[in-house]
Structures are given as structure tokens and as C-alpha cells.
Image 1: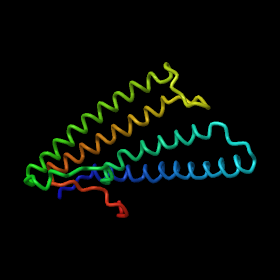
Image 2: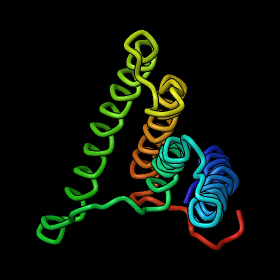
Image 3: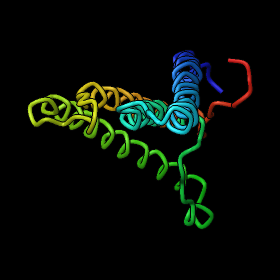
Image 4: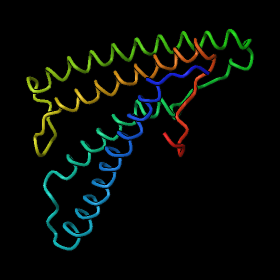
Length: 174
């Protein structure tokens, strides 16, 4: 297998972003959610105003980070019903074609998310209680979807050069 250093660098970046950002978001959601429900709501009868807004935005961040990471480690759903009936060569080229089409669609989605982010403040797209604008979250989603397009491109390059996609081995040293 050829040495593709940039794919290894992309893998390291995705793993560390998923660990750090995902860990921080999960810890925040767990601690804040527990604090708000058990202490503030049940004990003090004074829940934090806007807690649901913060939890929803934390979940958006978590999902945004999971998009490219999940694509790189093979966590996204693939339905391979027809692959067993295809020749190995045709299956490989169809996977390559699908990766290229999906990458193009992800770039289009990223572009549309940037456009929507630019209009979010103008149209008053905010959370319900705290009125936090969705604009930066559109931009975060656009970046993560564009990185997923890069992941799909790396998969296509691996298919051309190696004939198979080497995914992130979770638990392995990077």
C-alpha cells in the first residue's frame, strides 16, 4: 500500500478533534443536564433559563464533528445489497463513482450552508429562549461537511491507488 502521509495527517486531525471537541461537548451536556434537572429544577425549583437552547446547540456541535469522523472510520451506513452480485472490478469502480458524486454533493451542501448562515441573522434564526443566532452553527456545519467531502476524496484516491479504503482503526496508535 502506498504511503499516503496526508491521509494519516487527516486521520490524526479527525481523531483529535473528535476526542477533544466531542469529549468537551459530551461532558458539558452530561454535567450541565444533570445539574439543571437534578439540582436546579428538582431541588431549588428554579431551572436554568435557556438550558434547552444550550443543550440543542451542544448537540449540533457534536453531530457536526461526527460527520467527517464517522465517514473516515466507517460509521456511516452503507447498503451493499448489490455488491455481492458484482465483479470485484465493477464494485470498486462503482464505489469510486459514488464517492465522487457524494463528495460533489457534500461540497454543494457546504456552499448552501454558508449561504444559509449568511442569511440567518437577517431572517432572525435564533434559539427560542436565549436568542442565540444560528449563524456560527451553520458555518461550523459547512466546515465539517466540507471536511467530509475531503474524506470522500481521500477514499476515492485510496480506491484508485490501492484498490481498497483503509479506514481509521479505532484504538490503534496514530
